[in-house]
Length: 352
Ligand SMILES: Nc1ncnc2c1ncn2[C@@H]1O[C@H](COP(=O)(O)OP(=O)(O)O)[C@@H](O)[C@H]1O
Ligand SMILES: [Mg+2]
Image 1 (cartoon, helix red, strand yellow):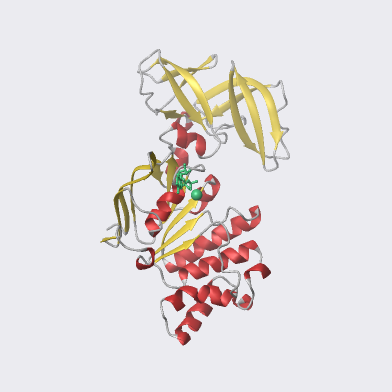
Image 2 (cartoon, protein in one colour):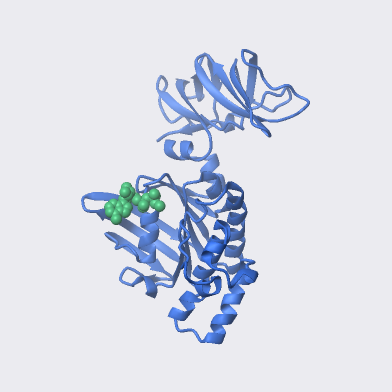
């Protein structure tokens, strides 16, 4: 049975509806990311789950129990915010102890639990520090420990990494995921960073203007985006307008060339469809397995270190593709004529 359910959830501020009929069932122990651009309603949904925001319509249940009329402190939910929301006048120890004191846990038990939490985030040695004496990453680990100390049934994380440096962001997201797995706590993580969502989630909800455009595993979201929005928001993508030359054989015209795709084109002959191709799907190498080839002229080539990103003009259509750096192979040069090979399966058809 699902542990956390959001059913026909809606939110309006005055006349403006910011969450439209949002539905989601989350399993116990699952790590879910809400991924979407700024203003799409991620924080609003999180705050409704936590009870900080009233629900305009719909139902929230946790472990089968309706939460709609419960106050935030009756829901047993832990939350971590983007800004370091630690109490500035309290030590690390007292910050982590806060929720336990409110819950009137006995002093020796508080002490034991706080030290357990500090061990979990590897900051036992900083227990007497104040927030201003710590780095941003350390403060967010304390915020996580503070949220987890009262043993919440659900953990909500609202862009907890977005104020941190790139390197810390990556190491801390791995640490969060590892702690989440260790505790088996049901977690909703909000981010606008697609790489972050892809790297740590069991499932991702891609949100667009208050709606869930697609819900799926990172693999599904990346490899089979169902809408144009998902396709362009998650990862880099070539979106190519192609004319259907024959819908019975799935033959399309791209630029000045014909290709056959494997997925059904979904529209009649003569119409135009959008096809999508990931930049890493193509290859220039002689031996590459391919059932589709497109020949074009290199219009730009950028050396990015491990990857070389090249733009190819195929009869007026531009394709962008990536190849791995290989010191033994000279990168493509501008004006050079090359043939890009890829599997017909890699051509995705965007229907929406
Ligand atoms: N208290 C509020 N009053 C009116 N509009 C709000 C309020 N809070 C958020 N909004 C609006 O709701 C929409 C969703 O906001 P939010 O959930 O914060 O988005 P996100 O977290 O995805 O960036 C935005 O258009 C925002 O301006
Ligand atoms: Mg937000």
